Image (cartoon, rainbow, N blue to C red):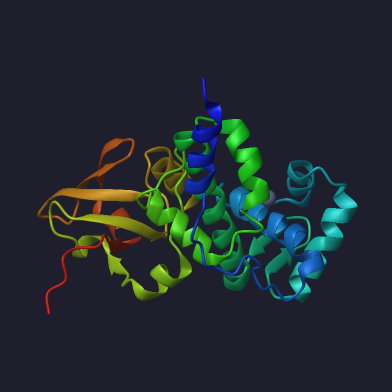
Length: 250
Ligand SMILES: [Zn+2]
């Protein structure tokens, strides 16, 4: 058996043509990974609909409450969070932008590692948590394109859109969609129980929906990843979406 020639052929084929900067420019590299993990964790805790408590944040990040408290003070000085004593922290728009950027990378790597390489979801998430801090924008978008621009992670969590894409895309009221049109949820303004209910039915920022039908009173029938859902007119009013890419005219 001649293994030698086979090996040669394979190694010649592994050459890749990636021309992207591998270092992502950050204003404070020594702090960046830790800052990113705080902002990401705050974003995930905030999804429950209230400020992220310092104690919960400390627990999730496996640090002491004192360290978490100090870091949140620093993040507040940098304009990334609002700190409410005894309540917790909420992200400012600039803190949220960083968190969503990191979360997008995490979810994309999770899809790649779990769905393409067959890793267990928990292991994929653990490895993605390392990759998310060293993935430049160009690589993240190349990865998204390679994966077919997925909108959900293997664990069914929504993947935030890229900042560029989000900035370019128009935001519309949900009621402006036509029947059959697909869109991605940008924002939901609702009180806490309603927000929790909608999230449980697959309607949350970043999720994709399809408008199935509109009633004459303004109520809508939509389809989410979790099934169909009827929305009352006052709930429809609180939802902003970006229609999914359609063939451009003109
Ligand atoms: Zn991480």
